[in-house]
Length: 191
Image (cartoon, rainbow, N blue to C red):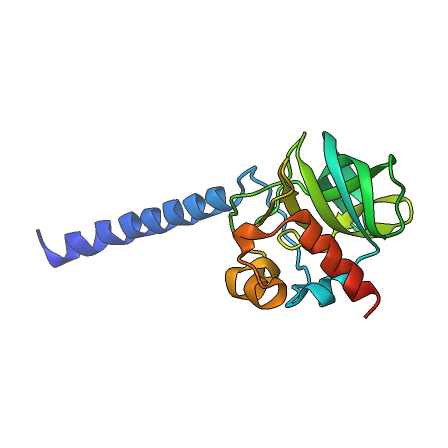
């Protein structure tokens, strides 16, 4: 092959490869996958979390719906209907139903826990007029409570991590009970 022949076929082939690469990148960007994300305040202490809540309730999720809501921007939410069996703090009614929204397709660090129907939770919530309530934070805004009252926190909930729970409650996180948390919240409210 002569140098002249190589020059004449290399330019069109390289140009074609570049065009194909650009098309592949554009096609990859234009996928139908939609991911939402949001920034939430993170709380270092139970006191800080309690101070930011409008209500802390104990209840059971009785239904979950997927719904578009305009909360400044129209987004897709999971809306959980919660039957309240105890008001720990704030404005809520025992026996009432409260709706709590979370982003439906949140692009965050994967976690092992998520809100599920038929489970009991302690929920730290913000209330809004004409909108469902929200958790104060997707990791710190809920605690799963089993039938014996034992609490399980999301692995990313730093308030209830091992050292913090030991310092604050004098117990390991695996030993925490609903009653321990209710007592601590009541002490903070009168602090």
